[in-house]
Image (cartoon, rainbow over all chains, first blue to last red; front, side, top):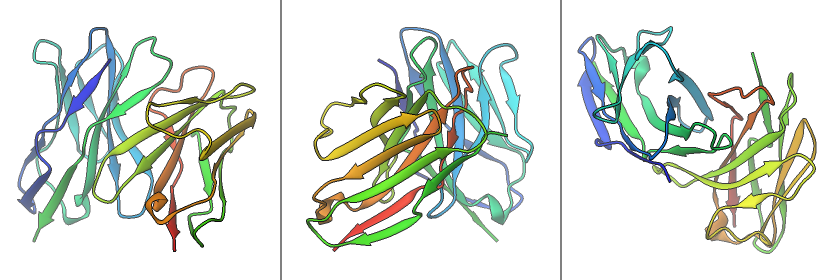
Length: 114
Length: 116
């Protein structure tokens, strides 16, 4: 069975500073990897996903994540954050051929300060 | 893009009553829908997998007689919390996957259930 570990429960950062949210996974088979963002009292929004191909994936709002198979990681990064990036970020994994079942990490609260 | 509508967005009910939450795929057919539960400041926990036309598959520890799931059509799945109690108060979120495997599933906006 797969599992996901988000190493930081909270990440405070100043506006315009870079940020990295860490995610490690465990699985005995190939996986798909996702990052979701959740604003208060809202559902999840897909930020970006890795299915295959290039290990570096990007979102439209400046986030990127790199799949590292040897380190079983999928860290999320942004070179310069904005106040509006304050939210909860969830890393998730789905096993290839696993019937679309997705397991989520515990989440990382990104708090951007002015 | 694929849209999933969840209704209601919030509900308050009295202890002992039942509450139904709807999850609809608006512009695609969802053969599989998932129901998650999220406690404050915690992650999403998968409750059950709902497949159109068949019984839902519940995760370990989830009471299937308490959380009734019906997926009668390719666009609608419902979760009914029966005989709700205050400990059932939570944020419930559904997601849907299309037959083509729309990885990066689309999530509903969630339902905040408060049992008083």
